[in-house]
Structure formats: structure tokens, C-alpha cells
Image (cartoon, rainbow over all chains, first blue to last red; front, side, top):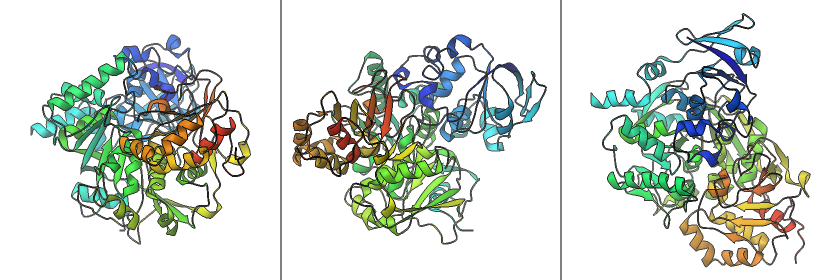
Length: 163
Length: 422
């Protein structure tokens, strides 16, 4: 269970605005986090507080395959991303690195910028503490749930290959 | 139950008789790809997870194409990490400055991908190889690391959108116009999680280069992959080139499609995407005269020989407009050489273009043509997101090589038809 304040964006948030290519050679997640969302929202890095929740519209994380995008978001202090839908490579990347994402069109539409929300990852229940509304995010298939529970894709494959 | 081309390839690589949309499967990989931006992250993850050896040193391609020749010290450090790993693991498919090309032009050209293959690449435009009738999709670095270690990865079997092509393209209309038109119709998430399966009698008229361009930008509609049926042109292309076994998969007559889009190639006109989404399409003639500062002709989308021929056809005997930069980037060394041999490079240089060694460079605002605030480019690349080619207040218009070259001559968005001969 986590709770935090919402920083909300619109549809088609692409990986170039999440972390521009000019920062892809940054040596650490912390360094990348300094430039997260820079071309869309230069003030994001000043506003974001550890535990905050990012909310996006449709097709969140579209564009390039750069895993640097979820890495930068995570390192900026964001605890999870809720969106109407996720672009598929971003979706895979987040799961593979164990960064929580929730697909929930209703929550993405109704939750407002600045609201305080809590998220129960076990049940997928999102609560807007500002309005009192609750939302049910889509659950993960068992296979993917296993990857997350195993601590990410590579631990899953390490265990598989070691056997 | 009938299967699509994609579903058949995935079933074969998962060792299953059949699959259906929504199934989660583990599939064997024929090739795992990474570049100088994504491979270093994958290498770190590979080591951190405790893996020692890659699953097959002949099935991992590392292509240093994005920031190379290295634009700065940090880029050089990333390349060194990839180079050291390739040496340590004795990878046979390692491409560095001097033999490198843009990965998605290079791999088909070198015969490393072919019909029926199952390929992942830590680069979103890996979907390009669908032009050859392969299942090919972009993934992230952790997926690449898993693929390098295990030779397999997990997939959710996608449902498909059937894209039926009819007729044939008119003069100055290309594969780029087809894919921009399609993205304009269905949107940047119109094919989210799905495959785009191209079919219809119109396919036969498309060159392999047109098919590569179309499959390349499937990701720009959110697709997992784009795929073409294998025909005589495909077999001709892979003959004497492709090193693997050709496996041809055809969609079943009763394959299930989520929806169908019909494109009449005869009706298409040169199309551009205005800032800041590939789906923001207009007919080129509607935005004719829009001032530009730069033109880029190249990239994994349009850096192949037929693209350079198209650009040279327009630029021959003409000059790039004053105060406009036109940068031409052949996608591979082989294309670079061919461009010289065919006299295209001479045409470009005489016209006042800069001709570069192969690199992804300006497409992603890496180097070799970044823009500052207020500048606008016409580019044959694939993305026009905010800040894609440099400053957040610069703009990119996506177009075909014909439109890009004509625009370079006029210093504004222009069409090759009716261009004044100087």
C-alpha cells in the first residue's frame, strides 16, 4: 500500500518527453531523474515528492523502447503510474524491472491533479482520498504476477535456468 | 480456429500446435538485438542477475548506431561497455564504426533476419523485419538481457488488424505515405498491443524498401509488430543473403481479425505528419509553403538506396535553398558505397547537402543535426514528438524522401511535381 499526491498528464505521454535522448547517456538513474519530464513540464522535478503518483491518459509511454523512461520516473520518486492504457514496451519494461503500473481508465479520467490517492497493490484498489472515490484497476495475469512476485524478469529466468 | 501470420510464427516458436489472441507464451528467439543506448543497460542487468554466458554467441547482434561515431565522452563510455561485452562473449554479430549501419537497415541487408524468424530487439523499430514475413518486436533492456541469457522470452499473443492494400502507388507516392496515412487513420494507439497484418493485391506492387518503411513505423500506431506476407519479391530479396532457413507462414483463411482497414493505394497522395504526433497527418499539398530550416534524409525508416535515389532524382541539378541545411545519411556502409557508385553522393554534394556516415544521430536529437528553439525540419524519420530533434520548441514534419528533397530545394514544404527546373 502506498499513498501520495497526484501529478497528472494527458494522453500519449511519449518516452522522449519522459526522458529526452540527450540524457540517455547519463551514468545513473539519479542523474536521469534530474531531467525527467523536462520538455513537457520543466517544473516536475521541483514539484515531485517521494511517493507521489503519476496519472496519465491513453497510450502512456509510447515511442522508443528506452527502459530509461520507467527508470527515470522511478528515480524521480514516483511510486507508481496509473493510466488509461500503456504503450506495450513501456508496460513490459515496468513489469520487468518491478516498477508498479496500474491500468484503470476510470481512475485516469476522474482523479485530478493534486489529489491525494492511495493504492493497494495486492487488490488493485485505488482510492482518491480527496474525493473518497475508489476504483478497481485491472489485475495482472498469473504469469506476469509471478514475474513481479519473483522480483522481476531476470530473477525469474535465473531461477528457471539454474533448474 | 484460424491463425494470423503472427500467431503461426509465435506458435511455432513456442512449440505449440496453435495459439490464440491473449495466450501468454514463452517463445524461442532466433535473434536478440541491442544498440549503444539499450545494450549497456541490458549488459548491466545481465551481470547483476548473475548470468555468465549468453545463450548463443551467434544470435546476439549489438549495433553501435545511435550516438556513433561517439558524440561525447559519455557516449564513448557506453560504446566501450558494449564493445567489451561483445569481446568477452565472443559475439559474432558486433557492428562498430567502420562497418556499422543503422540496425534496422543493416540486419536485413546482412541476411541476419528472414522469413518466419522470431526476433526481439531493444529498439522500438525492431518491428521493421516484419517486411520479410518475420515476427519482430521492440522490447526494453531487461527483455534483451533475458533474451541473451535464455534465448527465449514471454509474449502475449496479439490480436490483429488486417490492413488490405489495393491498387498501386502513383508517381512520387511511397511506402512512407502509406504508413503515415494509416497512422493518421487509426491514431498513435490505434493498434496498441496488436499486430498490423498487411495483405491484399496491392502488396505485390510495393518494393521491399517500401515494405521496410511501412513495417518500421507500425510501432508509431502502437502496434506490437507489422507483418507482410512472403512473396516473390521477398524471396528474391533474401536469396543469397539470408543465412537461415526460409519458413513461410500464411494467414489461415479463417484467421480472426479484430478489425480491417482498406487502403486504396491509387488514391494516396504525398502525406506528411505535422508536429507533434505521427498521427497528425495532412496531404503535403495542404501545407505547401510552410517555412523550414533543416531537412534530414535518412534513418531506419528512409535511409535505404531507393530513398536516396528518390532524393537524388529531385536534387539533381538543383541547389538546397539558402539558409537551409540538408543532411543526407545513407543507412549502411553498403548503401553509402552504392550511393557513391551510382553518382547519388555527387548529386547531393553538388546540391549543397552534407552527406554523413551511417548514424541514427539527428532522428532522436542525438547529434549530427540537432535544432534549437524556433527551428523546423522536414525529415524522413519516424517521430515528431516534442523535443525529438533537439530543443523542446523545435518542430519536425515527417515526410517521404521526395517531399524532403523538394522541401530542401524550396526552403519550405514542397512537392516534387511542378518544381521549377533550375
